[in-house]
Amino acid sequence: MSELLYFPLTQEQAPWKTAIDRVFEIEAGRHTGKVIRVSLAQFEEDLNQDGTIDQINVKATSSIVDRTTGEPLMVGAKPVKTVGKVESLATSALAEGTETMTGFLAECADEAIFRVIRLEGQLISLAEIPTIQQG
Image (cartoon, rainbow, N blue to C red; front, side):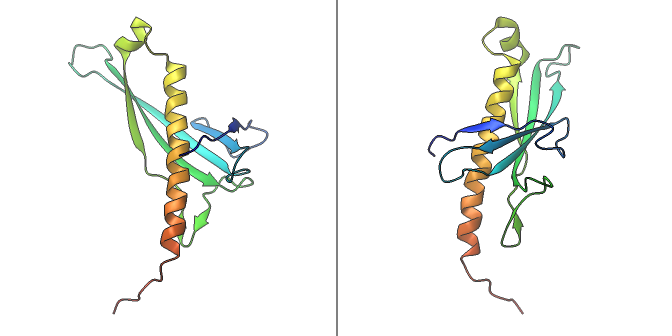
């Protein structure tokens, strides 16, 4: 997929945005003007049961949304919204300095944006195929 240029929207620009959301507007190319909502939720894991957090997991979902309401846009009868994908980061990488939390979250958001753009293309293709009524 080609590069996308996008910028974050503020709470004032997307008043429906919640604490787990990052909202972006695409500013160049054929997707210009589309608003993407990326929701990131984290949970920690103690993999070896020693009482220390070994891994941070982030579940990312994304949708192309209506700028006014924040609700997912529809293609046919299907919302343009991805299922959650979990990305993991070892806390040892944070301690060693080979990763940063900010960088990890940015990567999760970037990947979620590309996933929802690809999903939209597939839903558009699917909507062009006639539906056969069963029964």
